[in-house]
Image (cartoon, rainbow, N blue to C red; front, top):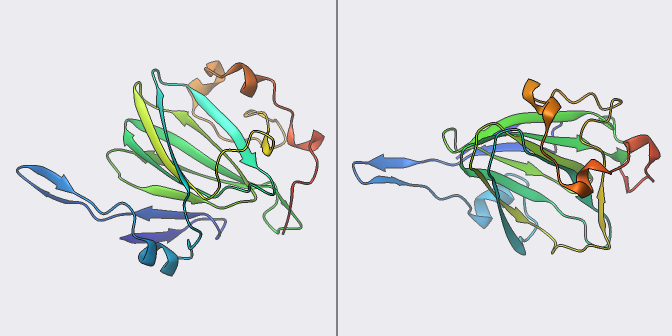
Length: 185
C-alpha cells in the first residue's frame, strides 16, 4: 500500500497493492490497522456506491456538520473521476484551498477526505462507478453544500465540466461566502 500526503496534509492519497495473474487480480482495499497507521483511524459505518451514466456529471460540493461529521474514503471501481476536497475549517492555514486528484479503476487510488472538508467530483468517463466508505451515517439535517463552480474557490474542473450534469439540489447550493462557519480548525 502506497500512502501519499497531498498539498493539504490531512487529505491523503492511498494506492492499495494489486496482485494480478491470468485470472485477474486481488487487492486488499481496506485494512483497519494499516489505515489507522496512516492516520485514518475513525470507524467506517456506511458504504455508498454511485453510478454516473455520462462524463461530465458533477456531484458536490458536499459535507455533513456536527453531530454527523463525515470523513470519506473514496475510490473508483469503474471509469474515472476528478476528485476534489476543499478545506472549510475556519482558522486552518489552508482554509478555502483545495486538493484534486484523478481517481480511476486503472490507477486504483483512493482519497481520504476528513471531516471539515467539502467533497465533490466530476466524472471523466461514462458509466463511472464511485464507491466510498463514510465515518457517519447519512443525516439529511446535517447535510450542507457549496456551489460546485463557486468563483471564489476557482476549482480547476475539467474543461468539459462547464456543461456539467448536476442534480437540482446541487445546482441551487450557495457559494461558500454565504455559508456559516461549519467547522473550526
